Amino acid sequence: YGDLSNEHWRFGFGVAPDIFGARTPTTVNFGGHLQAGNIAAFRGQLRVERFFQVTEEIHWTAMGAISQQVVSDFVANPTNIGTDNGWPNIEGRWLLALGQSDRGVAPIQIGAAGVIGETRAIGLTDRNVSSTWGVSVDGELDLGRWGARCEAFTGEAIGTYNAAIGQS
Image (tube, rainbow, N blue to C red; front, side, top):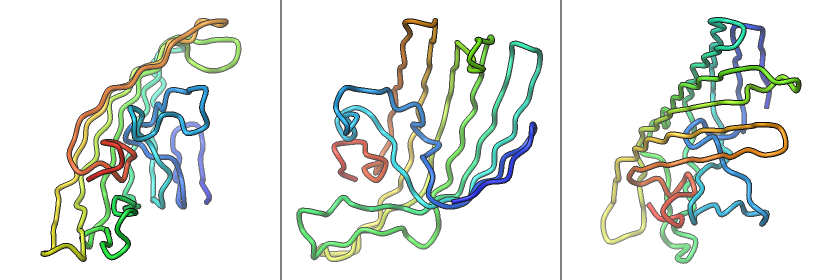
């Protein structure tokens, strides 16, 4: 993993958190309820981010990545193999950050993200190709001693993002 960044750009490569479903609300258990309501994973990717500071209290971030599928949908039957269909997933996200706190993190953040790609299953009775797509919205409110995080998503064949109880 590595990245190059300045106040306007960030370029990253290697294994990194997904852009799609990036909020990942925290939970008491270590698994974070992945596959049971939260999405997100780590995967190999090439990533670019562009930062826009509109005012002292308004910041926009645009993110894009091409990422490798991590298909684990067929663990119960090892004769079935899941893989990409010859091209990477494309992920994108817009993030709006409002306000400033003494910790340097914006107290209000709102994001929207998407992903497209294809998942191929080998070893079934026929070669099955599923279109991978998803959209998500997320937010965070940090008011010091209390706050909230939220995330909502929908899509198809997004088990590789720990959605749909890991099934694509």
